[in-house]
Length: 126
Image (cartoon, rainbow, N blue to C red; front, side, top):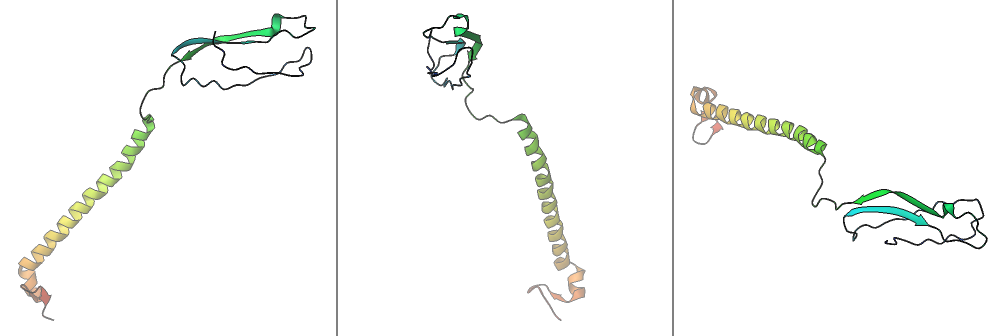
């Protein structure tokens, strides 16, 4: 038997009950099954000893998994955020590529001469 905590109850009248709450730090407790129970000592003049003890069900202690816990929905959220970003980057890439191709075509073709661009200085004659 391992005592987790001892609580003192004072001035409890006969045929009355009181709920006690305690916190059990299981950090250094070995893994396994444990049975929680409570025991009240006999007080002077007490006749009914049947209700001085209580036994609860079995409590299982297991160590928590190590590392970060990431919920499953986080991966879907990440995917929903990454897809538009990837589409945007692809659109920007092709937009710049098309603009560069159009600019190169302008400076290398008949349109440059038509609009009066000096091919060496890249300035307009006007």
